Image 1 (cartoon, rainbow, N blue to C red):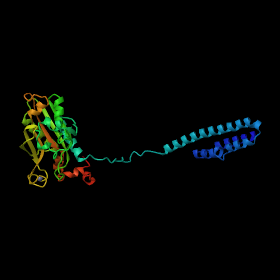
Image 2: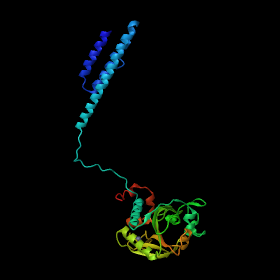
Image 3: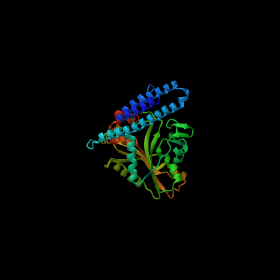
Length: 342
Ligand SMILES: [Zn+2]
């Protein structure tokens, strides 16, 4: 039996020497170690060997098995490295090929406009804060001097979650939170989504976006408000735009005003968007009511300030001549794909 084992070892050495690839090694593995291979056949043969000789031959067969396994393992590693190296050497990089353009999603027009408004105010020295969308009655109404019977508190205008918890109806809710905790001078804006319980139409939706802001310091005047808003609109539209200032009422400002800008769709001639007036209201503003300052622990004799609420959707309508506010919430790719460069 020893002769047979030696013969197999010699045959294996010869076969292994002739191998030139991983594939051939795999074939050898089957020939010598596979189920019907030569080494398992030797093991079968051990059954017929005399009991006394079994330990000696058993060891010899086992040595052969380990020898074959190790030799195949080494050869396999050698050839796989060699094949990998030759594959790499055949690959080359063509540096003259044009780069592959990645298709990136574009910003939603509302996000793009908010970013632009925020950047414009930052360039004018304002800081940015965020404020919760789920708000208490206190910060949405009470601290801002809304009387208890104000119509905005009505269930028909406001989404209440609990009796004193609601979806904020304006981004001005940041005022109370800010003025309570930080000392003037403060020049801050707050962008975000707000909610109103309104009938959805081409001009109104149950949610929309505002960028509200304030400036509180000593000796702030109404003229400061007007010049800041004029400068902001001039920067945003990159040109001088006609503004119209009308007196208005908001509980948290005194005096209050609404600022309109000339309708850019019809250029003042009158169209469906501006209800034939030639003007579009873009923001409400005013001098912060002394009671609001007092509610936040500030002395109205010492400090004054202005505040405004700016409708983001309205600015987009104006810039692009879009006539239906509902398009912003419909996720229609035919609409959104028109704003790829934003
Ligand atoms: Zn118009």
